[in-house]
Image (cartoon, rainbow, N blue to C red; front, side, top):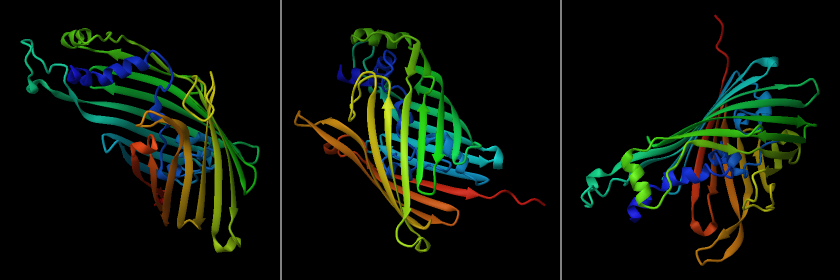
Length: 361
């Protein structure tokens, strides 16, 4: 019976999520780029490159390269879950900047044990097959500077596809909108409305007759087609940067504080209320020119359930370093997913490089 329930875990989880909007499409909030993750994802105001298409589309207006490419791969839970990102941005000059983002969060080779027990009541391991559960996002972004000095605006269109083997799939659509204001060489401010009009996923289930019988035999309700909603999330950010010592020496410091405001009810964050919950995160970066950057940040201030059965407050620490070599940037982040005593530490690497426009003959 435990094996049967284990095989049904993914499908049951999808059905439960379909009943309430909280934590819907949560894979879209993991973050992209090791540089951002090392600073606790506090980059809404300071982001000014290809990753801005994800963090704050208005920041794309500062990506002046003809083509900028970024990629990242990370693994969670000892490699069980894999998370991949690819981003592209293309400057149109004074007309603005285009961006494209691809995300995948997936678990592969999941055993399907729903047919483990054959019609004669015997265990038959040859009946075990495997499937994948994957979440995909395709994002198209555009940003441009406005006539007001320092102010830029941007937007992102998101197409979301989620699939659980051949049993369930969904397609969804959503919009993000952002503003970025650069007051002077020291202060920057950012605002993003993610899922601004609420993002929906339309789920379709395709269960065989045998699987339906397993669901009923194990006391589970049959999942039904329906809509899953992601309610808006507002993010406010303020960043401050300043040289360390004489400016010509090339040493600098930048720090940013962001606040996420969710609208789907009480969450396990610092300030939990209904319908709004507030989750602050902070990061700092020390750099030498564009050659070396050391980063740190804190995020996910939450109450954790300990293995001893108690509860305690904790934070997610984040550390990282970045190296710039001409048009190439290599970034690394060391972060954690989950409670401190769970030990789920993750190494994240990402690349970013610039391409100049092809020379005209």
